[in-house]
Length: 117
Image 1: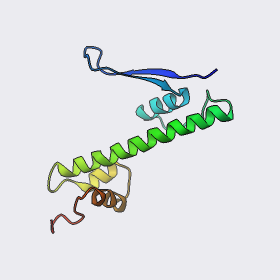
Image 2: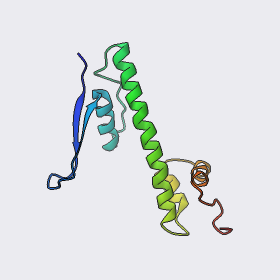
Image 3: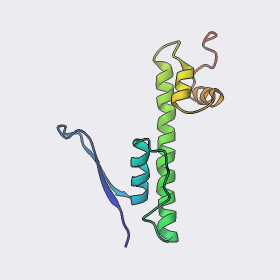
Image 4: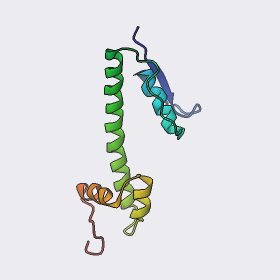
């Protein structure tokens, strides 16, 4: 039996509610744990065979890729908020070393050295 969950996001008083079908239960539980900042990462509980586990891995990988791209765009947006935006704070929030932050900023056309720009 293929298990999938349903998720609903949004304000109860708003008409702008997003719903998502087909979330693998283990991915949903991991996402909830991450949002709640839970420290202990649990292994999959629902996927019990090779096909279910590889489907869970594939969905997890797609979520990670999407969130990585979103994080990069949020980093660039934070850097664009002010000519002297605190890049150290951005790197800390992104949990990455400054060298990686600068590679991302350069990828999106942001100058590494803002004094020369």
